[in-house]
Length: 316
Ligand SMILES: Nc1ncnc2c1ncn2[C@@H]1O[C@H](COP(=O)(O)OP(=O)(O)OP(=O)(O)O)[C@@H](O)[C@H]1O
Ligand SMILES: [Mg+2]
Image (cartoon, rainbow, N blue to C red):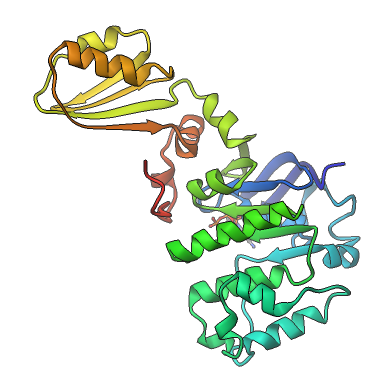
C-alpha cells in the first residue's frame, strides 16, 4: 500500500485555482520532492495532506488514514515542518523540544536531534536569538521529535547557507536509510536532483511531470550539451552535418552544441580537430531538471522563479 495516495485533488481560492485535479502516490521509504516556482501550489498541496487545509474536491489517504478525520492518530505518526512557522521569542531551544515532546506518546532524544542540525550549542538560546537559518533547522528538528514514519518538509533549505544546506541533505538522506518516507518541497532544482527518488514538477497548480530525475532527463530529446570557446571563429556547417548533433548555436568564437548521444563530445572534438580549430575552453553539460522544466513549460525556471535557484555548488 502506498504511504500517500492523492486523487483528483483540487483547491480554489476565490478566482485562483491553486491546485488543479492533481493525483499521485508516494511509496514507502522514498524521498518524494515537489518542485516548482512561487505560487505553483506546493504548500497548498502539502498542507492538504497534513490536514491543515481542506480540499474543495478529491481524496487523500495518508498511511491509510484520512488527514482530517484521523488527524489525532496521524499526528503521532507524521512529522511536519511548515513553511511559515514561529515560536514565542522568549522560549529557549531546549524548552521547545520539551514542549513539543509532550504532544507525543513517543519521542526521541532532543540532544541527538539538536546535534543532527548543528544546534547543540544553542540549546539555551532564546528563539528570538537564533538566525533565520538556525530557526529553519530548529523547525526541521522539531518535525522529527516524534520519530515519524512520514515527514513533510515544506521548503527544507530556503535561507540556509551552502554548508548548512549540505548537512541538511545528509540528514535527510539519513532518514531514508532509516526507512522513513519524506515529502519535501523545494525551489532548488539541484536539491531535488540530489535528494529525491522521484520528483513532481508543479506549475500553476498543475502536476507537469512525475518520475525519477533520471527518467525525466532521459525523456528529453537533447540531454547533452557541449559549450566551447574557440581561439578563432569557424564555419559550423561540418558540425551540423554530424549525426549525433541536433543543434549548433554560434556566437563569435563561442559554440553550444546539443545532442543526445554519448558520442557527441568525441564527434564534436574530432571534427573540430580535423578542421584545425583550436579550443580555448570546453565544458560538457548534462541536462538537468531545469531543462525538463523548460521543455514542459516553455519558460526558463530561473526567470519564472523569483527566488534565485542557486544552491551554488553544482555547476559542472
Ligand atoms: N490562504 C490563501 N488565500 C488565497 N490564496 C491563496 C492562499 N494560499 C495560497 N493562495 C494562492 O494559491 C496559489 C498557490 O500558493 P502556494 O502557497 O500553494 O504556492 P507554493 O508553490 O507553495 O509557492 P511558494 O514557492 O511561494 O511557497 C498562489 O497563487 C497563492 O497566491
Ligand atoms: Mg510554499
